[in-house]
Image (cartoon, rainbow, N blue to C red):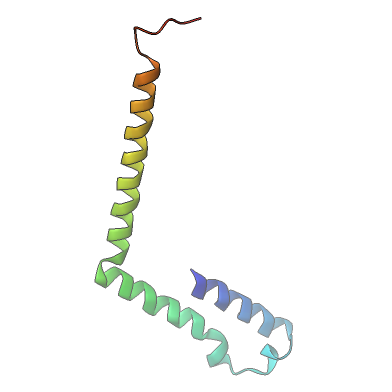
Length: 82
């Protein structure tokens, strides 16, 4: 994502003619987009994307479990309600 953000920023600076980016070669301006494609290809082929998705799912499960445990404690029938 950072590569795409940098690419958009340099592209805008080049098109608006902001120095020193306006004097840069187009290959240099568009290089962050190529880096983003390479990063995504590597992340998918190495399994990084799937591992991160699985970790997020496990974190959500743990949070849901904790929320349910807290809710069960509050719903204790021995406890009087006001």
